[in-house]
Image (tube, rainbow, N blue to C red):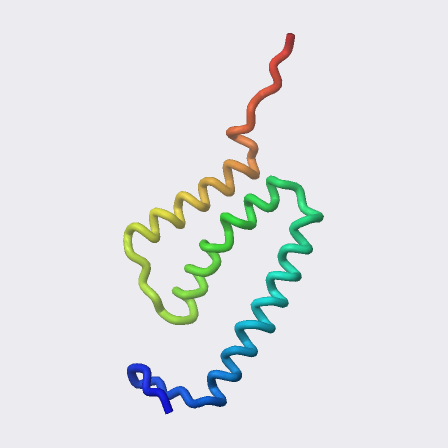
Length: 97
């Protein structure tokens, strides 16, 4: 029996953790990367921006994590970047000859 800071983990717990890690993570990556092949590049970029944003919001909502000012700044920058991409604010204009 392994004692990890108040969390007691036995051999069956490690087996379940291994199954979750390999099966669920492997299944997630398989589904995610097969779906990304059918998306346009700008949609993939937006999704990659939204992933950390969603993770931090989930931490706040579920676990009561209080983000510091650096994380909040990151959230704001991610949100601004997604809106700029959706509104096509920084796309190069075609040069007419």
